[in-house]
Image (cartoon, rainbow, N blue to C red; front, side, top):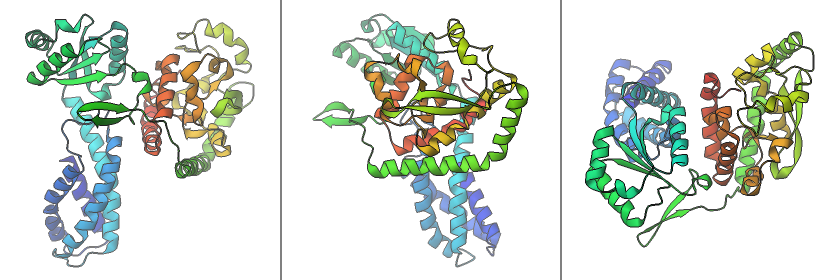
Length: 437
């Protein structure tokens, strides 16, 4: 329904702006195309009831929506030529495609928000080791957009619940919709019995792989004569992809700096009036290939605040870095800048000169970087960025160790679409001020 409303509104606006004759009759004729749109969107997998991933969002639909709308617009053009107005202008189709791309995405986002508000989340039973189970519970509760409600955890042997009667009892007791297996250590027969019982009870099943830290959304699922094989191929950054990524960085950073220049001057004045000290905070950070560079941010703390870092970190919630609900070193203006993430704007200069990217792993101070060893060093195989998984998924609400894992997953699963998704998801997170330190 949301797609239909968006498509009809886009058609109406495009026709009104281009002066289509017989406006009402033409719009009524266009209603007949909704059947075709439904079939086209279905062919692109946009109406699959069981979505591909738990974390599936409207942003993930954008590539399919783009292809479907462009193809549909090309088919709609000759269809409208048979309508009451006869020949339809090219500009009408151009405007329709532009409005439809935006309208369908917005309509789907609103519809998904409404569904989450009206319908209850899936009730999840977690089976597995206590430590990983608690991590999953925390992540589900931190991200209600996943639509998962952890209602029970079973940490014992899988043999206790793999039989139909046992699972049926648990499902009825907790009104379970989904089972999540988290490093159960079960043998094959127990697991197969559990999966069979789950199918009979119409329960969804999710399995957290043992090496989940190394796996990301780009994992490939293959088949070897009936044996499912998970592919973890080495990340490849083709020359064309590097050029496109760099072009996006330069154009994006340059445009934002240009458009925000009056705001930058206003912030600079506010910082100087609020407390003595420089406008910019400059610090050495570790970048790609362990190369150090100077990062620029608006100063949010009192001058010489770094001299008291060791005193503050002693009271930190995370021993690896400063994580406080209220850092006494932060100024009044600094608190506002941090809440709105405006203190990050000078990093756009780092992007322009090539030290950073718009999207990438978080650049760490040298003292924090030295705490990362082994496989975690792979997080610096790509240029660090202003935003990334850590910033989008919760910032300081995510611990240091998990941040390293998220950066590693980003690097090993890099794609241009991943960068675009993270950029699109950054603005809502900033507006909600999630995870502000």
